[in-house]
Length: 372
Image 1 (cartoon, rainbow, N blue to C red):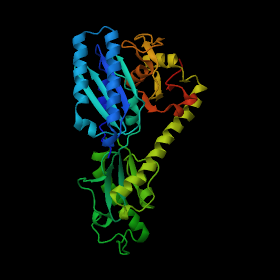
Image 2: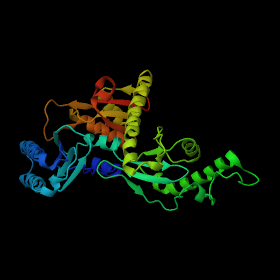
Image 3: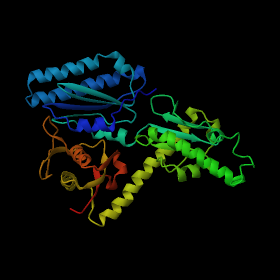
Image 4: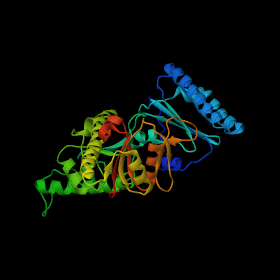
C-alpha cells in the first residue's frame, strides 16, 4: 500500500511564500516495500550532508545549522515514518520548521538550498492527482466512490442521495405504461429519469462542485447522456461505459485509471495545439529569460514545466532579468522554480510534467496572455 500525504493547492501556495536564511528542499525516490527502505534512508542522509555542506560553505550561523541538522536527525531516527512510504519523498525544512510529503509519482533525487523552497517537483502530484470520484449511475442505484492511490476505494455517504429512480419519483417502477394522462411510455420514462437526475444533482452539488478531484461517470446510455445534459457537475469527457450495478468499488477504481490517464494526456495535447497557434502570434515561448520576464509582469497564462530540471541562478524582482549560475550553492535557486512561483501568483495555470511532454523538450513552455 502507498502512503500518500501530498500538499493541497492552498498549502502549496503557502509554501511559495516561505523565506528564510536557509530553506532546504530534498527530493528522493523511496519505496512502499519496508524491507527495501533502508537504501532510501541512507540516500536521504547523504542528501542532508550535501545541504549542510553548502550552508557551511555559505557561512550560515552555526546555531542555525545545528537547528536544521537536529530536525533531519530526528526524521532519520523515526522508524515508524520510514516504514510507511510511497514512491517518492519530499522534505522541506528551515531551521524553524520541517514538512514531509510522501508522493505516488517517482521523482529524481535532488537537494536544493536557498532562501526559498524548491517546489516544482511537487507540482506533478498536484497537477495530475491520483485521487478522483467515480459516480456510478443507473436506474437501479447511484453511488459516489472515492478513489486514491494509498487507500482502498470507498463509497461516500451523501445526504439526500436517491436510492434509485423509482423511489426518487415515488413509484414502484418507472417503466409502467400507466404513467398518467400527460406522460406515458418512453416519454414518461424519460421525464422520470430527468426527475431522478435532478435529485442526484442537488444532493451531489455540495460535495463535488468545490472539490479539486476529477469526477468520472460510470453509466450506460441513456443515463450517461441524460446526466450530462441535465447536471452541472463537472465530469471528465470520457466515461466508464459499463453498467456499474455489478461492479465493486475496487473494480470501479481500476476502470477509472485509464480514463484519468487519457484525460491528463489530452490536457497536454491541447496545450501543444494552443502553443503552436500562439507561437504564430508571438504569445508562446520556451526561452527561460522571456518566460521569467513574462511571469514577473503577469503575462503567463498557461505553462508546462519540467519537474526534474534545475537551472540555477537569480531573477530580478523588478525587471525579471535572469542571471544564470553554473554551480549550485546555498545562495542561488532554481530559476524555473521561481518562474513557476511568479506565474502562479498572477493566476496562471502551471502543470508539472516530464521533459518529453514539453514542446521542443525544453525546461519550460509558456503560453502568454499578450505578446511581449
